[in-house]
Length: 282
Image 1: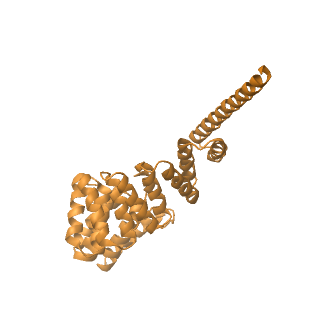
Image 2: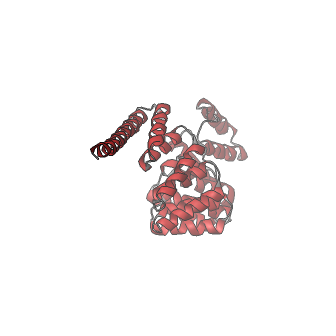
Image 3: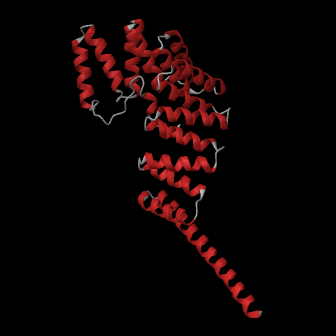
């Protein structure tokens, strides 16, 4: 009897010992990955996270892995990780918002709208969730729905500049200039040097209302704030040439050339694309 007892007891102890070793190895791999990630050694960090996840599926480790993948612009893989995270923690709105942003970056607008709506279901008081839903609807050309979603975001957070800018863009697309100007005015009251709002106002003066003096003033102000603002140069040059002001236009072209404004790597502020900047860091 003593033999069988010692046999089973020994087996249980060995199993517990193996579990402790596995837990220790998991912790070592996980935190080695975290340290490597902080040092910018992202490929090594991912190897550590993958090895750790082979030992145990862990939500926090998945989060670290998704962050590393995003930093490496491996968005399809990051999407898979975030989708798994939503399965593990379906009510965690931050994960759904991160997934929605990835879907925006990869231009999966139908899936983005679905993900944003699920984020709203998780937290109906989250203005960012409504903003992302509006962004998806705008990208799908669903202008009325986009306006409704963005209005909900603004009602929850009146100083939500990105939502007001996007609602102004949507209003412009729907030929609702007065509504667009209302949002632009609110944004500039919050921040008089907010570039997107200034550009939108200049664009309206230039192409809609025909107030060229105000358009030129806004374009010039934008260039003062951001000397690399391509669209401000383009708009101002168009007005100067239309007015026959060749001397000032030539001077501006030389200034733009010296700054290498036409470089493809420069930020793009054009209508319909300006909100893509820093999309993962809202």
